[in-house]
Length: 230
Ligand SMILES: Nc1nc2c(ncn2[C@@H]2O[C@H](COP(=O)(O)OP(=O)(O)OP(=O)(O)O)[C@@H](O)[C@H]2O)c(=O)[nH]1
Ligand SMILES: [Mg+2]
Image (tube, rainbow, N blue to C red; front, side):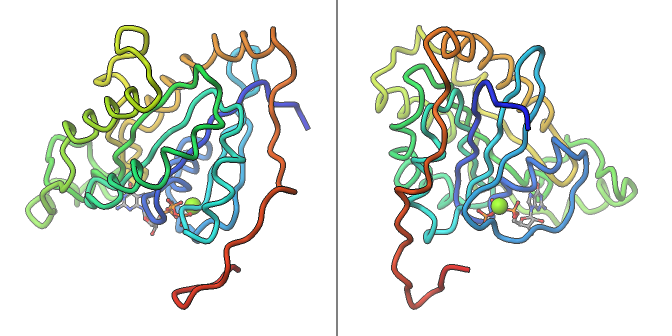
């Protein structure tokens, strides 16, 4: 197997669509998923570099793994569901701290997925069922999370990381809205992130071997009433 040169990690609550976004980008299709157990990765060749893209589990039981997956990450894609304000709040409350182990110059993208379910009729047609996309607009719901909410979170992340807005990409550039179902903005998201991680990969390579995931540190969470580890 090729050795990855750099790492991009998807984080976010269960059910927001992390696995679906990655499938859509890598396999160009939308298919039914099962809730992720632990984590999995794809390798993407980007120019001369191999980038590993890690899909993590949003389920609480696997929370402890998150910071291991983030170790040395060149970019973290924080994903929420545009129809769930709670999923955006969780990014700040539960997932942001996991990124402490990422590279010091890690890029952050904030992604609101499932825009196809909202009443934003400017979306391109559903490629699987083009005839349905406009007709079904009226049955769609108003977005619960506004783009400004995501931008506000991006600014909080900069504060948390003690970064100056002048030294990082603008919030408007790093907040995306996507649909893994229709493919809306999915390529744009990943390709924007890949372009931005190249200089980080170059620096990491100059400084030494990339960090790897060490799952020997992982202690599974205790079983709870609401569920158990698979
Ligand atoms: N309508 C719509 N449904 C989506 C979209 N993305 C994902 N889904 C659905 O949302 C559900 C959860 O998707 P996953 O990709 O498994 O979510 P996840 O974030 O990987 O969840 P965990 O692995 O549990 O952390 C599935 O039923 C998907 O089919 C989208 O863009 N639009
Ligand atoms: Mg998943």
